[in-house]
Image (tube, rainbow, N blue to C red; front, side):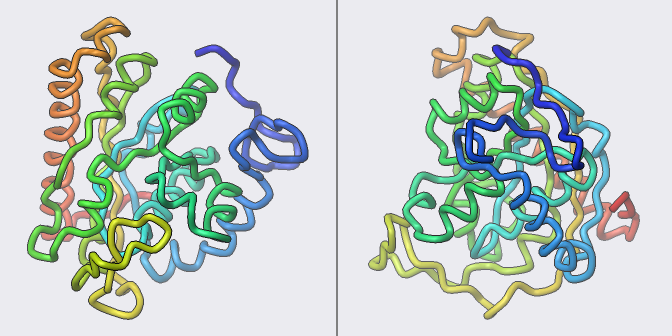
Amino acid sequence: MTSAPARGQPDGLPAFRDAGHGYDVFGLDPRAARRAARLCGPLYRRYFRVTSTGSEHLPATGAAILVANHAGTLPVDGAMLWLDVMAHSGRVLRPVADLFVAAFPIVNTVFARIGVVSGTRQNVRHLLEAGELIAIFPEGTTGVAKPFRERYRLQAWRVGHAELAIRHRVPVIPVAIIGSEESWPVAFKLRGVRAFGAPYLPIPASPVPLPVRYHLHYGAPLALHRDHPPDAADDPVIAAAAAERVKVALAELIARGLEARRAGAVGGRR
């Protein structure tokens, strides 16, 4: 990494690198992040009743890539993951969003203030070199648009996270999110409506997310970079194989999470 980890602030705000005017270079405002966590706390604790296991795998400092399954009309799963990471580590997770998200007025500014970043290679490279904790959802829009019958079956799998892990020498932490894929499924998609560049307009099966309990399972870090030199990230065969390794690990973690839920054995720490 090219720069030292950010330090916590004396007033208890999450750590960040002030690029001037109280924001980092992507617009993160730690005060806004803390307000958002406080505002969304009731949803996290009482509505979705989020529990998690394996949070000891979250690094206290330094860069890492969280890779999670993705579902739901809107990114509620990403919001609950963001809140859980802050609750357990005190760090602001930097979710990587599809490029069209930046075109939504107001939403784009709110997302930037709490740490969301547009998914360009340059942006992600900057975050990893700065020692940030980022989240990538390799299913992308195919995940949020999956039909209910396909819940918890990983969809089209992008390989960018594996390329980044190899190139920047950072671990990948799989995260199984159980609950989100029943909470707010898409009933159908209007493909002729492409507001702000979105690939479709989602029509949810219910007007609001159902209060399905969320269980987050953090897996052991995968050190993809130990098997390959940095320039191996340019080899599509190596990148695809590394991404498949992550996919298999996440699918196994999802299966164990579903089995734990069926057995009523999911506890965890809030």
